[in-house]
Length: 321
Image (cartoon, rainbow, N blue to C red; front, side, top):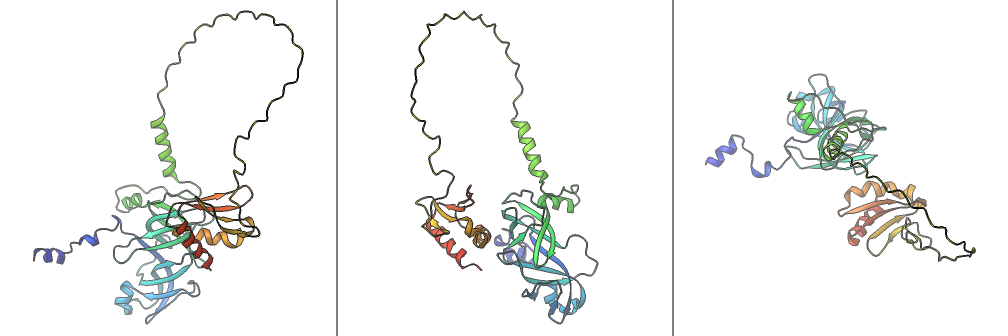
């Protein structure tokens, strides 16, 4: 009875307390029109699925007509906007960026971000978000960020980021506004490196005074020798031959699996234009440890230590559109 009463008062069960301290969300604010249960917007890409959710699903009559709507977006593995859930129509003009995402960063490179969204209610999901041109600042995986941007031709593009914890303290009025991570600069990484460098720097020690050196003794004259030719064995190369080259593929093949451990998916320069974008798009799904290597001849390789995982993942690359 006591447990039932506590739940009735709003206490969350253990399974409901596993989420992040700051609830995650992904919100897109877009102009559109709701007629009955049908939503339309000229900015949604062709083929994007639309359905009602939240307040718009519970009380669609209260959200009819034209206006700015709150949408909950979803993307495909390439980063295209594939689905939106229409949550409500705003009563007041929108303030702030068009796209607002709070989530845990899983993967980041110079082209895109992969973010895990763990909402307060419902199942977790992932978003693949391209970076805006010029936004190349380094972000740290396994950290929570607030990402801001907009809808650009069917893609949800990220233009800047903030550490989610610092941004949430500012929202609550407990801290000044945090500095944005934008362009090629992440001030929080620079700040951390500066502090660590200061802590690691040893205190300067006084230099010992040099001892006086004894005066050199005059060298004895040596008898002159006739000039002779001396043969020396050639020196061995400092590095083994073939270092800096990927393992060779069978003759005539431009992409394939080779190696006896570690194992390589090698792409020659002729295969990069067609296959490398697919490889790079599916790298976040590789379940084991891996490395990406670039070689002087233009070849690239994905190096892994689990052959079966590499084979299964390579089949997905071959089947990808």
